[in-house]
Length: 282
Image (tube, rainbow, N blue to C red):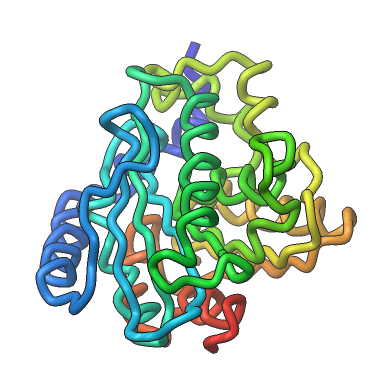
């Protein structure tokens, strides 16, 4: 049964009727960046499935920070090809950037998406020195469900995930309009393809996990979004702050769930600035 209030809070496409134009803007910016990026490696596999692919954009620097960006779309839509515009200011600042894809529900489960994101970060750590990156300076960011996956990454026991990985593989994370308690989504149309029950939602909710290290976590949301996104960010910041993590939660005034991301092709964007600071480039 659909919970009308949760549907109203979390159905971002219904709340922002102009979203098709905003998604098209992201795609156009990403296509332009992909064309203009001076050094890149496109369609790089990090796993065995067709979905486990990433695009790498390289800075003109050696031993550079490595950043991974995770697109949103409620685990069921969008691709890296409409998200790579966020890499431009990071590359300009001297970082290597990976923009990652993952399988989409219902073809895969939300648990499998979490595994794929961990696999992508593990691949980047292992390969970093080969492409001139610093494996000791890996950070991650994401939008919407990508924010949930940022939280999952920071909570990962990397030694348990795979042999030889350092406990502090991820040195920092930035979430934009992220989701950290997934239970409110169970009784919404968003869950039609995701297929979560309450147990699955809890298992994939970073709010109830502990950070594996004290890596900083910055959480942003749009000031014009539904109040649920403020609640998600502030609740996560408070919960992980009590567990020792350095957290910050801030609204980006005048932005909805889509326009909150649009300006991330500029170093002046609050979330971009947080990424740059975490990697020592801000």
